[in-house]
Image (cartoon, rainbow, N blue to C red; front, top):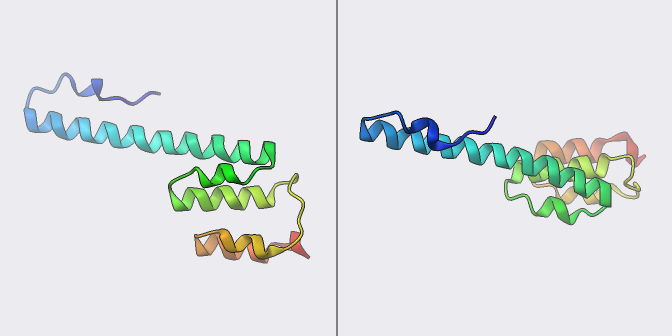
Amino acid sequence: GEMDSSVCDDINLERYKENCVEKAEEMKETQNLDENKITMTEKAIEEQDVSYCDEISDTNYKSECLYNFYMSEEYVKTDSSVCESIENNTIKELCIQDSKWY
């Protein structure tokens, strides 16, 4: 469901209320990031346009997007050097080592 700070309205103690609002905002941001990651990855693959991945601000999410893009069936595999643009080293290694390049 939708997380928003209205759940905090019942809290009467001011400092607890502030804390609650902060937490709710954080959760909402995380949720948006998740949704954004999925949307951008789908768009990138669908339209075969890697620039959608660049619109994701979180580097790990961006790395996942790039990885999924390069590993997608639609992407024409030519050369593993594209993996170098992946900032997360673990994901970069996975990308480089993938059998699809060979």
